[in-house]
Length: 152
Image 1 (cartoon, helix red, strand yellow):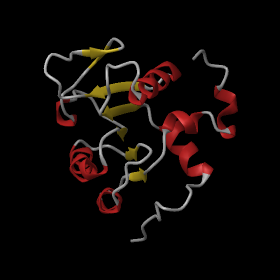
Image 2 (image 1 turned 180 degrees about the horizontal axis):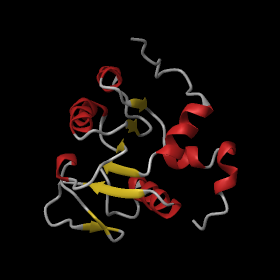
Image 3 (image 1 turned 90 degrees about the vertical axis):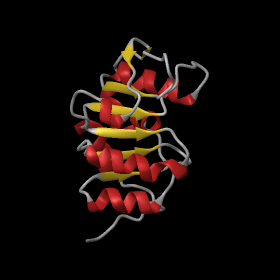
Image 4 (image 1 turned 30 degrees about the vertical axis):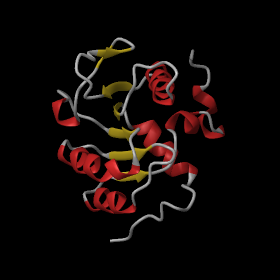
């Protein structure tokens, strides 16, 4: 099996294929705090039309932006295409194990979240992997021009 080098830039077609094929995204580390980067990314992805599932174990946190919050990936009651990770790099391996267990197709870690062992584990389980990137930023790259007519 060949593994991707996640230190190299991803090809536009790879990112475009992922972002155009996934529908349901579980965001591990979603925050209800409007000043947090994860909140802004959740907002944009939700408004772009993705079925967003915020994951946050904080007791009493039932919803973010009107979206039901789940404490962990295994609590989600529907299939998940992509797990997006807003956690520390050292948390990525355990989250990867959970993403594999729920049958996710893509593991995407946010800018600054890198764990090559987690990436290899995910790839061995058949998941596509993107590390150290932001899907919100990628959506506004030139190859997405046809979608920019959406109200954001």
